[in-house]
Length: 388
Image (tube, rainbow, N blue to C red):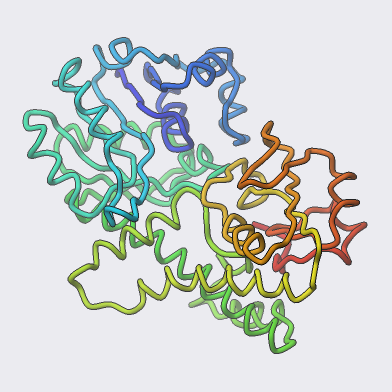
């Protein structure tokens, strides 16, 4: 098969590598530096499996910025371009998908188009009307940033938003690249597949919000959060996943997906979906209040990444904390060794840990790291179990 992948973030690149084990893959991205790095066998993302597979050189994989080179001979074209919730439109901005589809119509109208980008419920059905003659189906992703290729190699399930012949073939391509055996495969209508994506991520956000609110209660009442969570999680109906408190859910998916699902509920009765979105805002306000209660002069922000092993700053919960602290007149210094920038969110950034520690009387860490141990008394964190 000749397969093109448009967009080389976690979703696009992990899928490209998965499929390039057995098929010819041309990966398209608009950033020349990313393309050049990939063609040298380097990874623009921090992901151990992606880095390993690219360095081995055993893939039938090539990156390009040339749309004609990527699309003209493709049997399948995967679209994994960024979509984000637009608060002004109260809907996902899907313009990047349509931009790719315009090129598909021009260069490869007979190719099957697989939408991997997250979209509103009902989007694929509507877009098929606009691009009649092009086979388009939605295939949701359930990936963790930093372990995206692992989650493609060992998928929890494969959900295909079509039951056409080429949709069935595409499912076999994903199974062929996976290492896990006996993966459940569901062929759904496109709208139901889109709903699965948004409802799955909103449930995960619910889990995060629930245990964060449990932690807020324990913190203000002087209770031991870890003991309560351990006791609750021993119930097999509840389990121990997504139960480690944080400053709030963030990252590529949960903030935008919860807001998009809420937008889809505009004429449907609900209370819970609104509460999930609002709970994240409330948690950030609570964390900021706890930090301000220490009466710090200078607050150090230890890392902007959402979790250990990630290089993603996007929609990080700490961003909301920084905003609230700055509004209160607190000086902020950010320690982030993963960036070359000297200023983020209008705050100075340092890569020197010793300078960072010496300059701050309170250090705020969404996730604990062993290098913080010598200055533990300065650190404010709600990372109870030191994981995730």
